[in-house]
Image 1 (cartoon, rainbow, N blue to C red):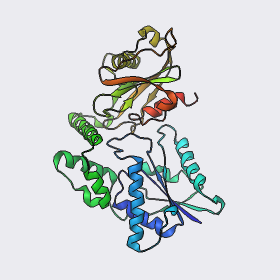
Image 2 (tube, rainbow, N blue to C red):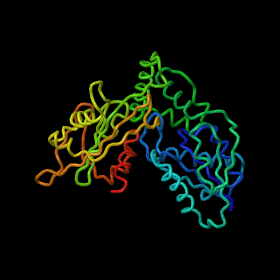
Image 3 (cartoon, rainbow, N blue to C red):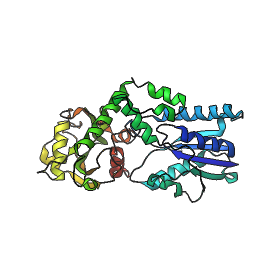
Length: 350
């Protein structure tokens, strides 16, 4: 049995993807689409959910089969959610490998080929699976999902661009339905990052420009303290308490200031400061959108109140809400930027 695999985020599905889907449909008995960033929140980079993208992919294969007048039973196609693990490539590779082999009925008989095209540095994963054959395909349609997303947001703000010619009609129809509440948040996020770039456009050393931030992972009785963001970017999204480091602050001072400003946690400041268990810098340029942000994250673990309850908290300043979330639940939430990865980094062995 010939098995073909195609990995991507498909944000959104576009005409370039269709040519690869057709290639897979014609040459393989089973087709697996590994749909990345399944655990990410809606953002300018990932505006569409797993279910939305899965629907578009299945529609694409169905319409291609009709157009070619061929039979393509639905059980020949599997669309599999793959999570992002920003600081653990091995975990991501293991998940991809496991998902494929868990779904194969007779893996000993499977001749597996990973199909894709190497568009840029982000395609490094194509060579991460030596146990699978790799087959490079030609980029028949010169279109990029990043450009489509830019056109989509720009057209809503400035009446520029026509992304509709670059995507299948059913995708265009869905993107035209941009009156959903989440689209307003995405548009505000796009505007925020566009204005940020404009404000620093004249900075004389753009290749060295980074912002410094500090975040806190505050643990208590198996819970982690999260805040719900009040403003763009990431409005309404849950996140770690934190923010920018001011000129006269250390990372630790900034983390503690932001923690108390945003959560009003009812614990003496000296107790919190004395309960720091670990700290780690996260500086991957991909960890946030816009101008790169470097953060120093502090793991702090405190005891419950004298009555055994979690300390009282209240959302304040840049946070519209603050809550203690069970750690197991928080690690499964689609948090802001890489905050889920940061929690996983510190608590993965707990």
